[in-house]
Amino acid sequence: MNKTKKFLGLGAAALLAIGLAACADKDDDSTGKKDEASGGSTTSVGEAVDYKITGIDPGAGIMEATDKAIEEYGLDKWTVTTGSGAAMTAALKKAYDKEEPIIVTGWTPHWKFAKFDLKYLDDPKGVYGGEEQIHTIARKGLKEDLPEAYEILSNFHWTEDDMGSVMVAIQDGTKEADAARDWVDANADKISEWTEGVDSVDGDKINLAYVAWDSEIASHNVIKLVLEDMGYNVTLTQVEAGPLWTAIADGSADATLAAWLPVTHKTYADKFEGKFDDLGISMEGVKIGLVVPAYMDINSIEDLKE
Ligand code: PBE
Image (tube, rainbow, N blue to C red):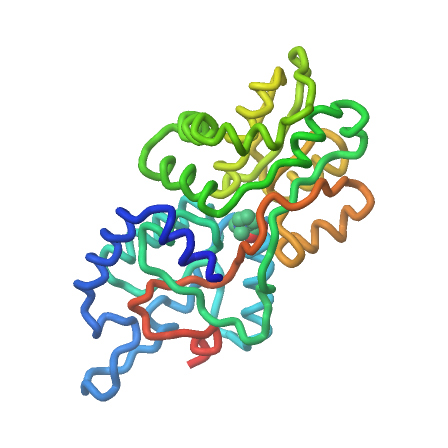
């Protein structure tokens, strides 16, 4: 089942309606690649976006994959800009509101699919992998030092709709902690599955590290509350992706919910092999790739060569 569609369908019907209404207004000519038959000058997608893919933070796995895509698809004129998840979505919104072409490094789950009508570019060479999974990883020794937290973190799993509802609430202006609290309060049954039979503790400290990607902001704020409700004193430490994996490997952070595998963070997982515990999968069927507004008339990464 197409997870993006599922997220749209179940997660944010009202937002989708707004998205579709906006979409119906789109002018077919504003595709970034003018129709040759219309007699106008032909602008390639590359020319229209100055041969730039709008990227995120340099340590993200999707940035490494995009460098590889540029090489493997022979996109010699192209570069990927660096920034952040927030800068990428701001650029996407700006272009979308003006129906201008833009190509971003994108991933699912993400609220942008609920707010904008977007599509992934096909990746026939499979550079971005297929279905990815989000793993929870911890430092060596956490199991012995904080066994209750280790068990809760191992049990933690949720769906794209769960994460989507937290992400959309944050995007709509709810404070991160409040959006997480609302979800936790509404999902006591799920949380009791993760905590069932686990003893509560008395203020033990745990340090969770994460990167400021919208998906990970949502998951870490939720698990923080779950662990706090079990008696933990939780610190969330925001870092870049490289330092995140290093912190787990050297033990300066206890755990993270931000490990995307098998492709996205393969370089980090290989580099630190044997230096972290994989506590399992919290979400299946996630995805990374190049994402464009649906009004652009390109469908494949190969179309960027033109
Ligand atoms: N992301 C979100 C991350 C993993 C989670 C896709 C931006 C990355 O590319 O490393």
